Image 1: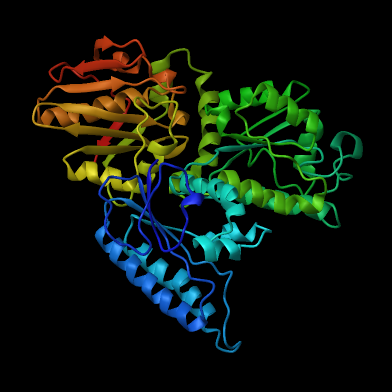
Image 2 (image 1 turned 120 degrees about the horizontal axis):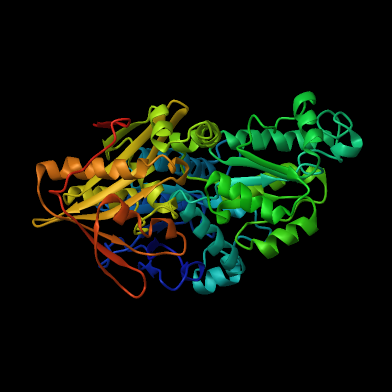
Length: 527
């Protein structure tokens, strides 16, 4: 990912070698194309308050000019640091007021007006640093606005912020029970003998559970993996009023005496998501070590030694792995949707014939063109979807809008059945030129697999497009480390394989004249 960085002080040491930098204070447009435009302006900490206020006004002018000119690329603006607010008077803190208005009024107004603008609060980074924020020797000799000893943590922090802007985050948090969700061992201390609620340390575990419960409402899947007698845990779920994390909020759980790495793999298979999307929380270092060894792709943070550290621990885990720039409706509904899948799978067991099962679901697929209301979700899907993704192309909102401006067709599908509404879970991007269509991207959330929706949605989109134009449709499959499940998908839909390269890349044709048949138990609405 290549960045072009507008700056007024020395910041090269804070970014990788692929980044290009403006001259000090230069606002000329970059000659090349970049993935991100970064606006990294700060106030000179050595100046008088009056000069600092003048500099803030100058920064406003530069940012306004640049953002007015760049509307088709993602522009990331860093807030002003609050570390050097030296005011002449306490009653009217002029510099503090100017910085606050810049960060909380000026930047917010800009973002409301332009969807390609994103703001990163640099003060969140400084809050966690214990070193001096500026090394005055390097500031006066090299104009380094941030202490060079902070360069490494800044790089890591900034890259994580870009991931959050791109809506990349972990999907599932897997929790142990004893001494993790409550203090003590339920099998020994009893349902009401464990430490949970009321006095310390029970109040710390209760606060931890309250935060986890709220996390589940923000689209993060909760699961439990515990070595325990399931009857003991279920009794606590049912009878301890202070316990909040139970089978009503969990999307999956494994409570047994089996290997936890195998249990986590089993949970991943049930939820149909990759284990690299998991964060595993366990107080036992032996269990953490086992999961690290056998599932190295699972994130396993160290558990705090004292219960009073649990709240701080939660926020450190959240900020590093689950933070997001913006939540979509689909994110918020995700936990409930995984539970609905459980009921779908249970209902499937009573049918001997797949057609009878699918017919019983009352499946409705609404195919909707991309618009301002769903473009954020569509960009998010290209960034996050790995397993069912034909070409694994990553796009920002601005990239998708540019495709539409160039005549591309972008569709999404909202899928629902009698068990619930999955929301927007399918995306299709088809480019068009004078001679042909090209299937640039086709991807979907794995939680809707198993109902053949992936086939009938693509066929419905193709049928709709080719009814207007009889152009042939080209397609590709580009293999990745994670999308093996889509390797033969296009053949199953009716595409004809033209050739396959040694690296596994496949090229296809689709004849628009062929008969496209869609089973009548699907209700397809093309908006």
